[in-house]
Image 1 (spheres, rainbow, N blue to C red):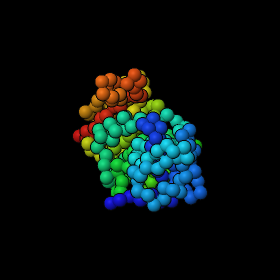
Image 2 (image 1 turned 30 degrees about the vertical axis):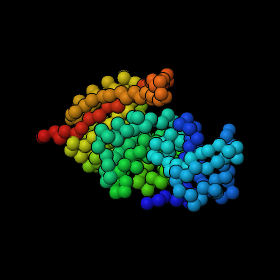
Image 3 (image 1 turned 90 degrees about the vertical axis):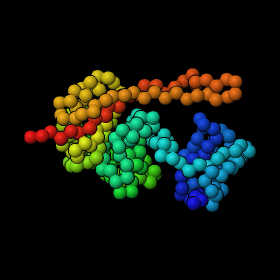
Image 4 (image 1 turned 180 degrees about the horizontal axis):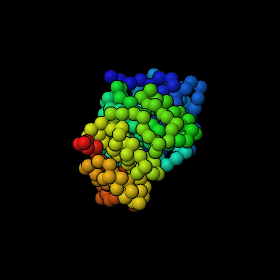
Length: 259
């Protein structure tokens, strides 16, 4: 079905791979760049993917924002999780439509948004965050991405316990994940998944030890490195700069302990 841009919609203005702009379409508003300005109301009624020119005659393309565009363009007060890591977190956790997920901490809502996107329309993400100013930012970002209805954010310390039970996955992006492992075990259904993202190997070691002590199996830790390619006939090669270390991702599954 053809998707038409309406007033109030978000549009990703594409100039080049390194120059994209997430804007809200509003009548009477213009968006200014170093390549001239674009009259946003001229987008109303056009199909996503349409081309338009700026005041300087430079061509932009109006793309429909994907979930990664919302994540990359969110208002950042904390370090966000990169899409390369989010992709693995989602895949290895096994979450999908209808899944119930517990997350900590919320931060700006980048990882929260991705989880909500994949569990909708019948699933739910419950996110724990101790800092109220982060919650306010995350809610704004979730609303803009159209995902707020699939998320509940609790202003609570997850190290003190997880209230939810029989959840499909627990996803941790916090400084002390090992303090949550026993609570995660109690919250998960049998065979449920735990995923922990940590920037340092010291955090990983403590987390893996806690997982092994608390009845988890299939424990593994990976690091994902991403390198783009420069494509041009006769001079194709890896780009000089790459997104290397961002963090380690530890995965595990809950095994039921027989009493």
